[in-house]
Image 1 (cartoon, rainbow, N blue to C red):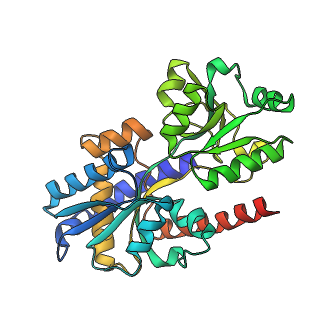
Image 2 (tube, helix red, strand yellow; image 1 turned 90 degrees about the horizontal axis):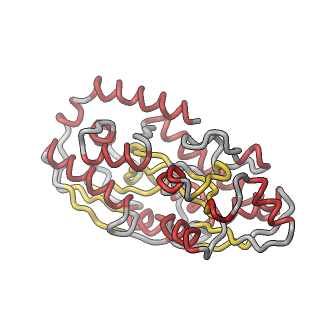
Length: 317
């Protein structure tokens, strides 16, 4: 999967070279509202605002950032649904918003077809992480502790990840004490403080792992972690689903094709350039841009929604 993303990024970079004039030819008919599905001041919010600033600098488009948070991006999706299709309304969420969160919300009354994917920007390196001082150097060590009767407090920052933790425990005959918290920072703080024994972290653990304070016990994805490639992946641990995902720029369904192409090309150009503040942040925090766009992105979003339905069914059995 990781090589696919790298290949997609190369293909997208070539596409930008070929179609870069699109962003120059297209002009939004008014200011562009950029809904941000994350709390102000965090890394995701900063990424979005840096992209907005560079769009304004490069193209002269007026971008109005607006934080619309809550329910894993569903509040943003609900507010965006049925909005203008001329490129003046876009938003940034995670692929989980149009996957598990839509599939699992009985009151959502929406589907991926209600939105137009513009491009992804960066992916998550989702790991199962504990403090080194906990004494576990491998996933097997954690399972052995659980099987010996220890109460393993497992931090998860979304219902989807809580479901994955449940399936992980079920696959190994143990019951984790799953604790849902708000955001990856809260998981890391809980693990570092000893309030959690282990938890999902989506790249935020990188510096701690490099320093030897944290350990990636497993890749919570269907592909290995870049930092710890020898850590087992979820399918090898009996869970046929992954906890990875990407940041995703979307618009209402029916976005005009010229607007979609121009916005996609302009954003890809920015996030692929490490000389921009946005590109530098993505390189530093996420290991570089993860770019999926066009029809490939449409299929990727639908596949995430379909997988979410299968995950929900598996937990319900």
